[in-house]
Length: 232
Image: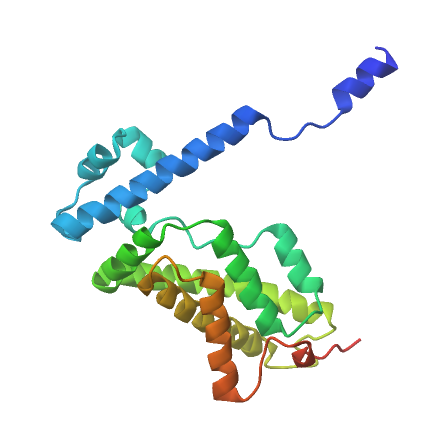
């Protein structure tokens, strides 16, 4: 085999146009199924909606439905909450631009924005979940799992600064407190965004939420002066 042939064969290639098109089609189909599920529940009530009704509204087969969702309930809950990318997590762990709370909020917020959620569907889903006990219970479990995962990422950041249980016995509690505060800020901002009209800037709403935290606590957690200590 010639060196030029070997070089050609070993050259890595990125995602092709076909792969990108398939990803967009999958995302569109999933969004259509989620929107159809929420629409049917709004019209007929959650307990009266069947998979067949969702499939008919989305114009897909049952086989396609179950390629995306394991259960009917999963379609109402929608895709799992957006997870920050590996690159974003790495930057968060090694970052030192501001406080752990500030950078965690911004990392999660960026992941949410990147997922481009439909605000009408978000608003209707939130109403449905809040008024359906079984969906509410499932959502609480799902969010708890996400918060545990985020707390693990916060612990990695602490460890990168030389902080462990040996130096801070309640460090796990601290990590969960950071996540709890971040989720509260984001939940408030998302609720305000879902209740506002389309002229509202989600980032402006987040800044408003941050301003409220500063007003209540007397400290702006989003300044570089609020960095957590490093113990080398």
